[in-house]
Length: 133
Image (tube, rainbow, N blue to C red):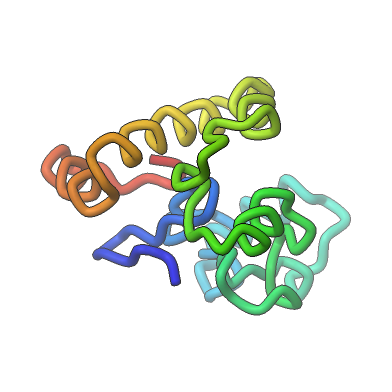
């Protein structure tokens, strides 16, 4: 189960599913659906599905996610709980040029240091609740 607190639903790799455009689109947010269909021009609305990384894999945007499979295999809830954190795959993810991937890994380092509950309190105090914290 992911950490849910208000507008937070932290995935295995540290993304905030609660604010994810894909997740919002498949749960009835019309503006998010427009964004997704604009980005994935060949997609049909029914193909935009995701219930988060802890939901059913048949309702997951990235059912073949390496981090999801790895965490399940190791019995972990979050990548930062792993003794190999940050592993080479996660470091590659953080440096793939996608800004929120880098920020997500930076935040997971903080989560590891102070714990996820304390990290969520910090974020809520700052007024943050974004797709990729």
